[in-house]
Length: 415
Ligand SMILES: Nc1nc2c(ncn2[C@@H]2O[C@H](COP(=O)(O)OP(=O)(O)OP(=O)(O)O)[C@@H](O)[C@H]2O)c(=O)[nH]1
Ligand SMILES: [Mg+2]
Image (tube, rainbow, N blue to C red; front, side):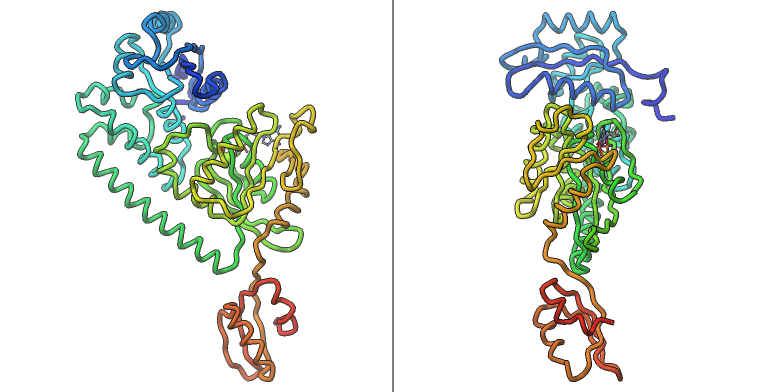
């Protein structure tokens, strides 16, 4: 049984944040609480300090650090997690003062990803992100090295390898980059293939825990793991969905997002995220019962923009409407949909909206064109729709991938 599920070894965490006014520190802290839970640890308490800026040496002031030390002693805290990135020096100083292992928000998120990664690609992506994050933090003096392998914030495929020297790690990073590059290329070849075959794709993207996998399951019976945990899904899953109008769409479920997503993770997961961003239609799912759903939609929208995804329909999907007491609170315009992925309410409406946003429809046809109707062949050829042609005794057997406006011209020759 993995350590994080073993009740006897559940680690107790103290959460620490500072409020500098840069972002909503309170709600970020609540999220940190959920992140700690998702990592399999138990958040015991949280402490927040208002400051103009973080203390260079220890983030919080010395008085507060003493309080933290005392609290940790009294409550047998296993690790402290800060709701912001820490410098290697800050980690060293805080650990020296408190004598408790200290990690930051990024290490925590990387840790959750490490637990969740199932596919080969997912594991490589997480390892790359972990190594890149840890590399500058390994001063080579052995102090940080000895922290590794000690529970939350240190787990993952990279853990044992990190015990070797920096040169080895650098080589490993190079290797991972190359391996991922190959996978990225394979993915893009797949995409190209799908495009040529006229397969339409729709990606389900959004904040973590919004209900993306639940929606995927409701739409396609894909059997994707859905859990009330952050980052339940790491590897993209795709499954065909037949729309009421007969068009088949490839649905893609993807990794969830979070505010201030660690930069190295975005980098490492680029190919996965690009997979979503390159879909024909994007469903930006949010948990409408969560006070911050607007921020969640924005986090997704800005990442999509970063990935160059600007020229396609992005449909806001307000999920978990069953938990909203007054549905009138949720914006409702012609391009957004309110649903309950769990019981299927609103799904018909969602399908209708997807249909409305389908790109120009392509369909594959097998045709038998009589010799005296050869002009149709020229029409198809000019439209770039002809895939193959063969002269047979009965006529010209052709295969064509045709855009909707031309369908009526070839109807009579369909085999
Ligand atoms: N009440 C209610 N709960 C829902 C609904 N949709 C999903 N959930 C619950 O929300 C939780 C998260 O659902 P997931 O489908 O795993 O969410 P996700 O967006 O795939 O999450 P990540 O993969 O972590 O990014 C689960 O406990 C679901 O049962 C809904 O419409 N109503
Ligand atoms: Mg999921």
